[in-house]
Length: 244
Image (cartoon, rainbow, N blue to C red; front, side, top):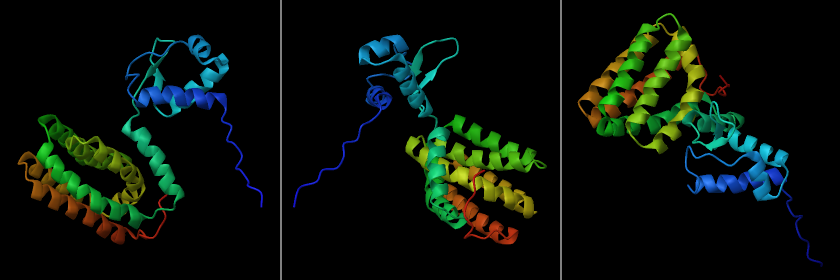
């Protein structure tokens, strides 16, 4: 029997250029804010056409690794925003047919420890973020979309208050997937806004007192309450999460 070899993968030149520049960015050889050479100079260095460099930069820009600053013709090294990274994960989860129950269960596991860490690590500025988001939630009584966004913002402020970027990145895809079901629940359950506002207030009290147990317990109650709201609103937990 003769030995068979798999075909070689031939990558387009722009992918190789993007990989080379991306490797420098990820290794921190190129720091955030540092300007890259011009397209003409990069083409000279890599020995490729300028159009190849341009395509490589487009790919890096879509990944959030470079950006063109206002008033500059040169690309600069950037750092992807949490929302941009999380959006890719959210889209992947949607394609894997995650359900409302899947998202809810993940939140029950992740959010209470985040609240606990936030109570321990929070700064005065973190408290201001939560106060502002909670107050805006109460103020937006007639606007469901704004209420949903403010509620999610409270979660994000708690994630930031842990001062652990991994936790912030871990929660963001779930928050993006939570919003559609939360929107329906707030619309259909009259007491939902009041119960969410109460949870926000108790969480804030726990964080102000640096009460780690209280913060974790209230977050666990808050997430459990979501499931009750889903049942009252008639939301099927087996329903696949939809985009937006």
